[in-house]
Image 1 (tube, helix red, strand yellow):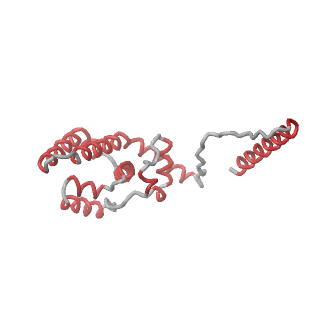
Image 2: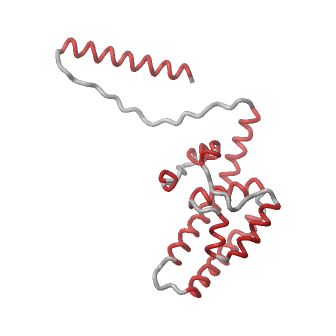
Length: 191
């Protein structure tokens, strides 16, 4: 890492000296600029255990990506449908229940096979992509009692549905999502 920074400093020094000598010989005031591609610098792992945990998390994230994509798409569809003007409360509930049944038929068996770590990552990533925690989704789309029931179950199993996603608390997860082509949503820039 230090070698790379020293090399870049050397390159810029050489370019600056070259630009200076070129301007001296030509007697013009031309400024040279170089545009470099954006790079992401990540730290190396401290030991093999850290590398193993990182690679395991990356495997888990790639495993749950189809469920993440389906979940965020479902959230966006339901959110746009229920926020349409003129939608009655009954129509809203029917739409939510219909979509819930579709997703349950499609993914229930697969999601039940996830381990606890994968399920926790799925909850975090859905909260990351939608900028709404799972507890708030349950409260809005189902009812507060259902949200409390699932929150109690989650707390008994060491999870928290009401926790807002914070990108600074999950640097490895953010690196993985960035590598997989899922940059941090723009809604986090305003928060």
